[in-house]
Length: 146
Image (cartoon, rainbow, N blue to C red):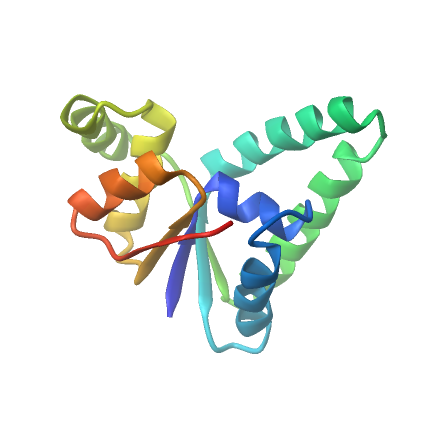
């Protein structure tokens, strides 16, 4: 299976919250070569923001450590071809803009749907109901995490 993880699903791997066990299972399957994790470089940037907000709320100094852990894990999975990290192109942005107007969603959410469609993922994972509705309306199979 090819799982697209939006930012909300992806950070559950590094910040324990409802749905973390499910995401851990997908990563474990990727490590064994059974499944492939797909996400965008855009999501990595958003995850850095989430880690920073988590750090400020929890009054800890963990944001940099979480980001390093994620990047190290992604690097390993990338070398073993069990993760696909997609960039943002002009054509992808054009598709996302159409989805913004069509579904009344944020551009970052539309970029995630456009990316997942472009690379033919099997399941789109998110904890955002609105994003999942838009992805479903675009013909994608979705799963709510958390």
